[in-house]
Length: 88
Image (cartoon, rainbow, N blue to C red; front, side, top):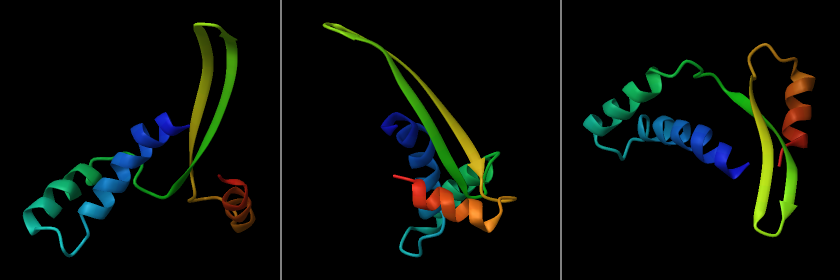
């Protein structure tokens, strides 16, 4: 799941923080804000991840993984609490 976190979430987190943090130079904030504003999915979301090892023998490792981005918007409060409770 670390690969998903780095590829998907880390960039978004950097864009969000660096575009709004008061100690970051204004020009730098504007650059990061523009990157963040171009995102299709800017609302808060959960990342649901499934993985399965298909083969693990000697020098061969094969696996399958699937990640789903689930927007919080539209979820019932109970669903949000359950996902937060079940998250790693």
